Length: 115
Image (cartoon, rainbow, N blue to C red; front, side):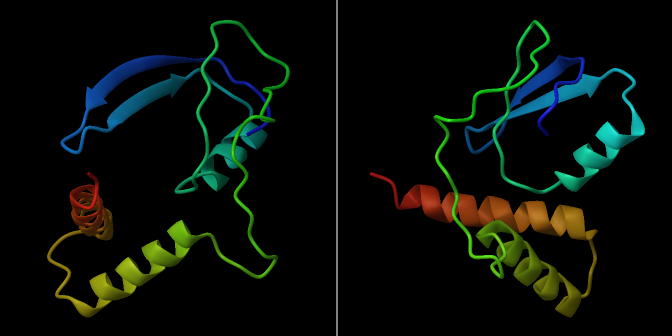
């Protein structure tokens, strides 16, 4: 999202894997901004918070993720594979719960590889 929207951070929670979950509540925004927000769902990005309105955010120092035109981001590919696994199970839980559980397992496995 290239434009800024008025919002406040209403909750900060530490997670089991030492990450942080930030809840942001936005004031009423125009429908085009809502559409932009929904398009960003499940995409990797960078979060900025500034106490004053900004016209534009300087993203020149962020690392660039390069993809071919035909290529899906790795996170989308992984989510699709987890969805197929969920489809093949008995679906005792919603996909959202299953997905988060599987991601937690993957994250824990990766953390074990750290020194």
